[in-house]
Length: 243
Image 1: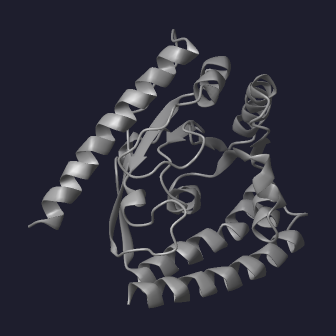
Image 2 (image 1 turned 180 degrees about the vertical axis):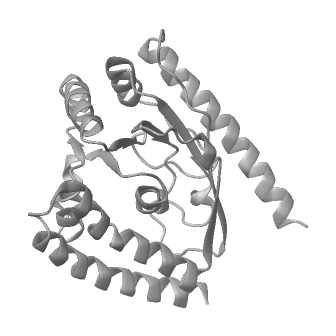
């Protein structure tokens, strides 16, 4: 059944991707936030399909930690699930991503219409300048910034190197930082076709104020909170699974 459900999910996701890619081109003249709400209908649809077809449910804890102003969200990166879900579970966000993703047919078209911060990871200095300049503008436009500091997805239970980009932006524009942990990789592993049913927990941590902190110190605080919370989520899942 997992093979059948994963196949059905992939087929329906592909159809939705083509449809919303065309829609994203049609709504290009609209204001950014209106365009965002329409195009992220794809995200809502895919997350619902993952729930209905694959049995991948989710819960959110710590919503009260979200500030009332646009902020920088720094999230654990294990799966494709969080890249789809976080833009609709959190306030509107400009995602920091690899420039190459915008070249993917259909999917990349839709992403481009959401005004992401598309960087060239091969040029670290230029990428930092771009994150700072465009991140400042997105925050001024009323959008948050979503960044995955590990840069690429890591397998469940692993820890990637936390890049400095998100912390660099926060300290240069004096924006609050919200750390996010989740266990999506346990059910929807990186680069995996098969997806297993279960409950994903998205944990939103307390806001970190960058005032008085250097980028590396802020980055370490984000790392420590996320990875400590990841251990707690893993232990919680182990207990509930073996009851």
